[in-house]
Image (tube, rainbow, N blue to C red):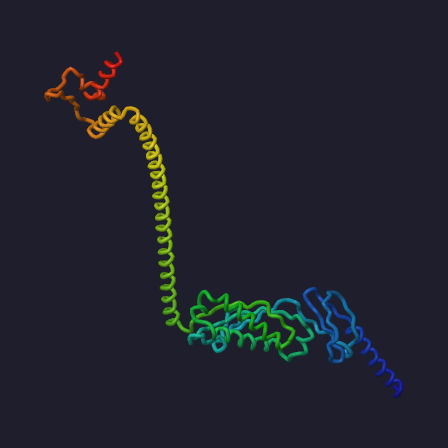
Length: 325
């Protein structure tokens, strides 16, 4: 084989290889859960988010960096081995609370890539930066929290504050990542003895809260009973008031009638009032009418009469009859 033929074969081989490279590197596929960045001579100049088959300049002119759109989870303070068992990292999870107690804290950060260009080119290892920012954020929040809040009712607030602080740090770093959520997995004390002591304190606090709630329930019950009794007393008093007013009104009306009769026949009315008063004061007493000599006037049927007529009344009646005759 001559030199010209050899060069021709080599040239054809190189051209064939180049053609194959151009064919196989001029197209790429983006799935629904993926996004791509087209890099031209090392510069990111296009982001592709539409799914499907796409074409580009062959390598080494352009290359496509495929990234996921899905949500990632960063496990801070623990990891899982191949068997699925959780392996904790004590040095990473040990933190000091605001009241100078040691707690073990691990959490999960959910995040996603929202700017592929910045994720690829603004930082060499964006996930490491996210991990370090997570450590700084949770330690800052735990360091300003009380141990009671970290172990009991304050977890939700700690999660929210950690998420806000971490998101602000990531925004400053500008690495194309968005923090979606922070979830505390475990916040516990470093050894069994301390845990037992804290559990006793927590149980005592819960017992105290239970007693307080029971006392408030009893207080509300007694208050309601007192208010009901007060309402009943007010109602009875109002009824008594109405009754007294009506009785007084009736007494006034009766007095007015008696006064009219008194003006007409004062002596008769006076004797009548005396007899009615005696009947009301001495309802079971027997009445006898005496004559001037002190003897009883037995001819009057006093026991069967409801109202005895006094002698003075009889005399006035006789005089009126005589005068009439």
